[in-house]
Image (cartoon, rainbow, N blue to C red):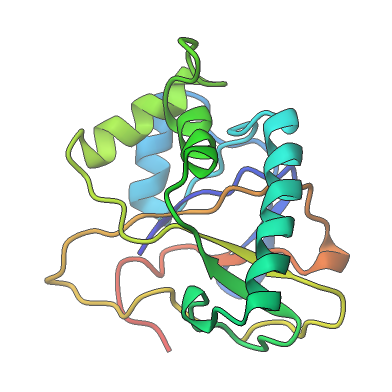
Length: 190
């Protein structure tokens, strides 16, 4: 399952057990597609404008608080260490749809932040792809690092699944950024 987007200003990838700082992603659509095929991930910086990320983060924090207080446990997907980390399934409300339209398409008649990134998605998944899961993952102080894992079980015969991670805040090393092992999208790894 190749993650498609890690747009925070600083992400670390793993390659042959060594940390590799990802500072400057490929910039042309063809280069991005080549990197995705080879490495299993690409970094798309500036995918969500800072103002949209900030307002979305604040609104989603309130939604998370309300769901926790209401006890709606069915809204949570499985995640390690739920005491300090949550994976909240989002409803497809107009407000939540606006996050998607800002990142992937048009919002209020204007093109998204970087139309080239929309080209990447359209070339990879086409116009008839299904959104399988839509959620927000939060980690709070005290959360332990997650163990190395795959988001889905590898199956060479299955259709391609793309994971998109939209960082709604800058992520630094002390926060425990997402790590990706280059090339693990091509075979089962343990």
